[in-house]
Image (tube, rainbow, N blue to C red; front, side, top):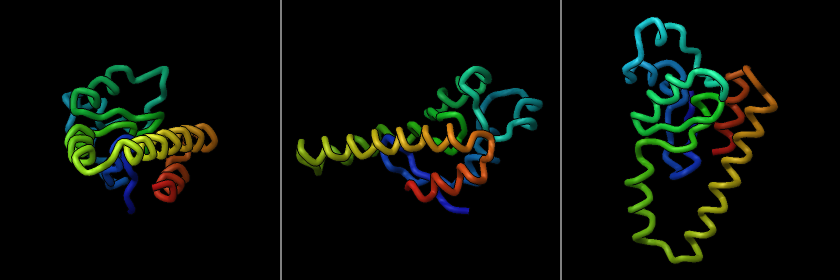
Length: 124
């Protein structure tokens, strides 16, 4: 499996780990972890989304659409140390475009996480 990237800081994350292992880091009940399939519909799973937020994660409709991650704060501080204001604006625009593309990919491919994963890897 390949990596998908955080749309906020660009950190690579193993797609298998996001789909199958990250849920075990939460404090959710065991039965919720066993049933987790990597999807996070916006109208459901409020408790699951909050458990991920507590760990520093923000996702789209699936864990493959990484909106922000635990590395965002550290990466942001490191990047700002080396870049000019113009470069920072350009990077922010690129990341915003990636977030929009990722949302479109999830909307188009819906529940087919294998296809979403392939497209997210290509987007990276």
